[in-house]
Image (cartoon, rainbow, N blue to C red; front, side):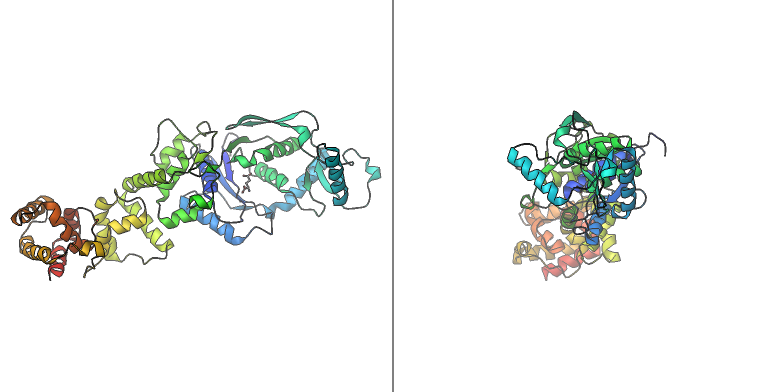
Length: 467
Ligand code: GLU
């Protein structure tokens, strides 16, 4: 690893599903690293044994995999590194940047109560900070960081600018509890340091933690990473995103059938901008993504824009990739997989369905004519078009199709003729044709459907409908 190599990480706590905000944080870190020949690491922050579950870890990995965000090396478990965290706490003791604190929970509570009664800061000040080791009792102790009491801590943040925190507002935080377990604040720093993380890109709900974490870097004499705290995602109304706005889990978007490339594009633009770039490929995003483009105001989720972006990606995607992702969607959704014949017909149909769909269920619905098989069952809306008159017209049409050459021009000539013979516009003729060929009233063009399913199948479907 060269000294200049970028290393980013995503460090979720496995306590639920992969939130869309977490997905975006992971994406930003991934783009930043991948666009710079760097590494993107994944660390599961599972130190909270009560709240962490293997199911949540599995859900996070599944969500990242669906989004196409691959990580380098093994997934790191923070809990597994607890001995290393404790080791660093003891190194801080040895360096004199931490101390043993023998205060009991009762003493700390009493200190706080007294401070509050006086109306002063309730920041705990341990009497052991500068105590003579000769006075140490034979009792359990926590290890506290000897935080600076005066002055300020400056966080140079790539998004938020310079953030100043008064040191008097921060206590000598515990880094190792009296039971020997490390605190979260210590664990994050030790892990980021050991993993060689150069850039910490995460939600701005961690901005306050950055001040305390930076003190740990300083206490160990370690290089502080580049900080980039990104504003959280808000709902369309500008309020903190919640379930009531709609889906908040990455898995839910997968289940709704959004294409992953569209989702990546949308999430990249959610709180980041580069000139007027709106629709771009993932490769383009890797090249463009930077920290300067991250906005300081919270981005608002915009479902219409998400759909639009996804629609663009559906139509941009090469057929083979589209088909592959569609099949993955079917499997994930527990829907029947495609038969060989369906796959063939669908590949031939993609050109006329892929620029109309924003999600895979929409694509499947548009491609119904290619996926279904005889007898075609017309849905209620399209069945109305198959009255006696229309069935008569379809009947008169089939002999002419027998001898037709199967090109769009030839078919257009025949259908225009037939419509004229019956004194109707082509639009009127198209309705029963859609019903006969697809059993739907919203379909690709009649010609496209006929060309995709072929001559024999077209005639058979029209004969079925006419009968
Ligand atoms: N585990 C923290 C979270 O899920 C993230 C910590 C970090 O990125 O430093 O919010």
